[in-house]
Image (cartoon, rainbow over the protein chains, first blue to last red):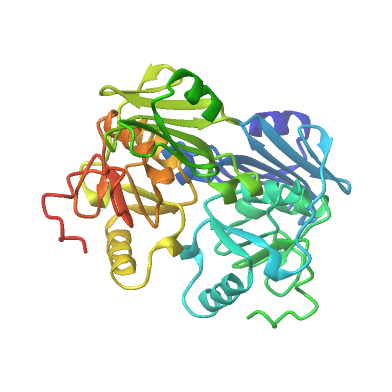
Length: 205
Length: 205
């Protein structure tokens, strides 16, 4: 991937999880994660994915989730998200009490506030579900029945590609306070859903 | 499935999750679960499966896990487990500290002893992983890198098909005390692995 980008867009920056950074202050920067969901990958669970993001001035503008086993590829850009070329829309439950909520693992939330907020959300939703990695964001973006993803402890490789996939499908992906995500975000907690949680940002924490 | 079995084996019993029981005391009994992992199914996560078991005198003799999206089918019978026709073997970590352990959700363990035992196991293993439904048993049986599944609150539809798939691959699937599983088991806690946990059945609880 790096070679292809460098050949085609020599002025662009590249930030990769595996081979470090190149021109990270460029106007256009690619953020690459060859395998998101490493523990799924090494145990044979086909929900890991390749994540590719393109950011302009630090803001995610294009995102790709590619699941090579299922041969599914989400692409979000220019206000439109597609799954294998077909436009998709996030639906999202109308109320938190009706929401099917994914998290990779309940153990990702740090002690104190994160853990408390997760416990409060878990008590509200219809059902907490686990172990879906980046694929969970694809499920929400495609309106397949998952309404919400909540996670913590994510690096820029983990979230930059997901933002356009989710937001261009009509969902919303932010930090806990409802702020949009950029390359400069300090992200320890993400929400993603079709719900309006942000009208009362502290009502669930 | 029921029609096919009744036409071909009219003396056999059938116990299905969805349409009740027919001759459940017959020598040969089929136990059917059309969709194991309903919450995965309704949210679009392709790790649900169709489970088919054949029991002789209450003991699981043949088991099938079929994942229709991934087009993967495990068949365990007569001391041999195959995945899409190819023989597979459970490998399993040599020590609990090296084990990748799956459970559908940490919330399936009841308060008290179950919860305590799960917490103790979780503290021992290399990594607790979640959300794999019946597919986790297939991963263990195929030696793909998952070593252990621990679950609670399973009905006969949930476990009968898994027993031959796991055991015929060289794994071992029992209740918490290390007893083999039959139609008469009161199963609230299952272990499945290539490890010998049962030498000291209480050392982890």
